[in-house]
Length: 274
Image 1: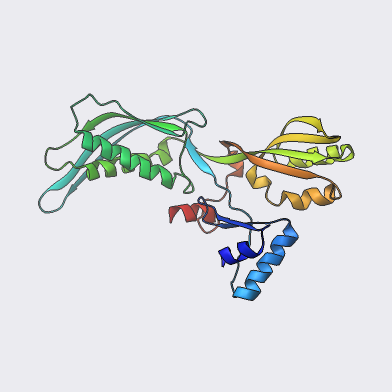
Image 2: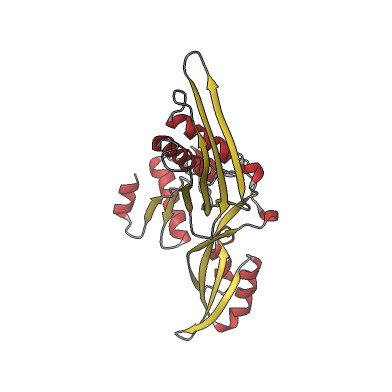
């Protein structure tokens, strides 16, 4: 169905957002998109649930935490054993994630260390607050102990997972939101109204400039406040303004504005956990 629509209408674009699992439909205008959705419903009998773009939040940790975790299990014959101490520390913005092995060489088999790293890699994608990937932190394995028979890479992977989950209580996890660089090109007589509206959207005005006889406002605005912005900008400027936006960076969400972590109310988080 998607290929057929794109072949018929060259102004139409469609993609799947890997963060939220949503299908993103792009077109020449909102009227164009409304017509396309109506055509999909009528021609193909599709029940299309149309809504706002899901915001791809991230999470990070607000303070350092040194976590010791012991994974021990005995069932019949051989058991499972892994002991790890991991130091988790906040990192600078845009660092992502870094793992450091500080255990003395040759004291713990490399395969067990790899199990720790694998456990952290997978668990950090599940988040600490609302199911979003955790970024901008460093994890240093400072101590590890093993048993010649009962220790396996899988046991150390489970120990790393357990240590990471304790960060929810000990590392003051924080929610991060995507900040967009927004440029609004407008006639001079509407500049005040547009700046006031951007301020109401928690926007930070970076400056103004002139371009081809028009005023250009440059601002950093949270993506969550830019959804359906065109619907506000058009009547405010009598259709004489246009804007562009692109991702710039992630920034901490004020705690008073944290979205509800309930997966039923926070579908992007639930989509990424699936």
